[in-house]
Image (cartoon, rainbow, N blue to C red; front, side, top):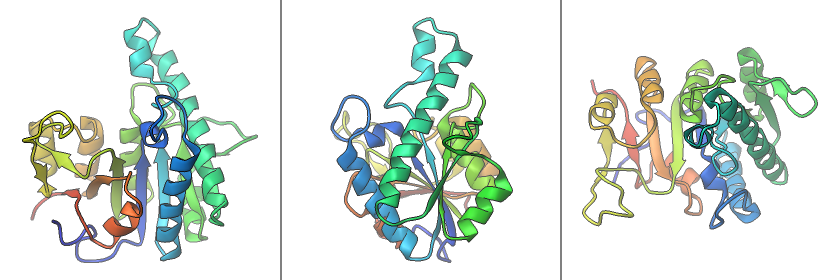
Length: 245
């Protein structure tokens, strides 16, 4: 088990990556309200502890551009549809957080002023400093980039101390633990180990961006009650990815 998720000092500002699949719960498609409420409750407790929080939401529970492209759709068009799916998820997460009395702002990389503010880095930082959870929607606003890359980009832009990725399992394994009973979980990895071993954590662009900015990544199981709170306290299990000195 790891001893700390934060390293030597507790993070003041973090970015949480929520995949679209994380919002489905046990469903095959769409958003499960109970799952979103549970995640929102967990985020609210971390927020009340004084941590500034940004969230990047995926859209794979509604639409995935890469899958659509494989079926013949234009990739850029498919990615545009996928970015719109992330906005739907962002609004759902916003609603759940505000029912927990957590002030929020949704900032979209694609302009849609009637439902979200445009993403402007300084504005996002100011919202966080004023005690609001910032939910970043529409990925990077560009096709051919995943929301994992958007999460690494936003974490670097917003000067976050930590990038956390909530997944279906409790860290990074040598193989898929749901298929291989002999898969071994890694407590710690370097960015280059993730890239050279082609470990299925985030895409290479996201890992490379985190490496360039010396941004630690923590991978944990989002589907356990209170898991976000525990990992912020340094309680495992989880996998921490960073450069070793």
